[in-house]
Image (cartoon, rainbow, N blue to C red; front, side, top):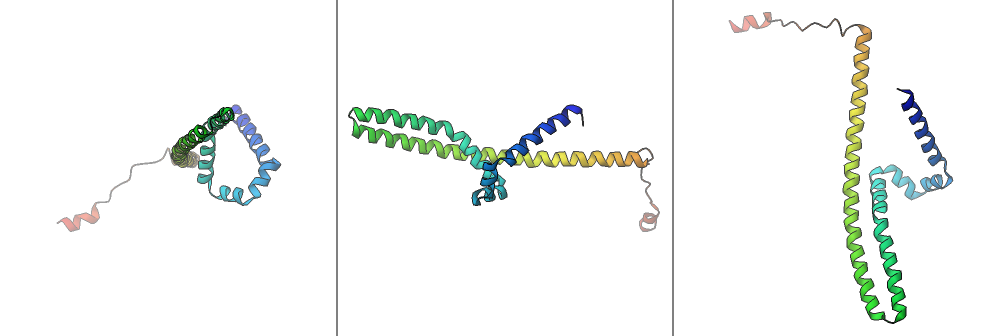
Length: 157
């Protein structure tokens, strides 16, 4: 590996170690939910994608609720209930769509991870095989296989 890759790997390892040594992370991973998500990475990725994608619509909904609550204090309580109910239904529709989107994205990411890790493992395995053949000298001394047709001559006549 090149020197830059080794340095990048050391930096990445230190970031991962700092995350794993954080007391909040350790406490969460020892809980039932943390152990479940640790055993089911696809579910963890789906939950993470859902939380990340749904943060902005939830923030807009909370701003909407606060704004309409201020307007309700002015005197339009019945309209407030209708508007919040409509906004809640709209938020429910958006969150359901984002939930389906996050499941799809995490599924695609999981498939990409499996494919890429298989390709990387195959690449390292085939590279190691070529190096072994070069060391043994069998790569340069390979000859085409010789076909033995004497066994077939008796059957055809």
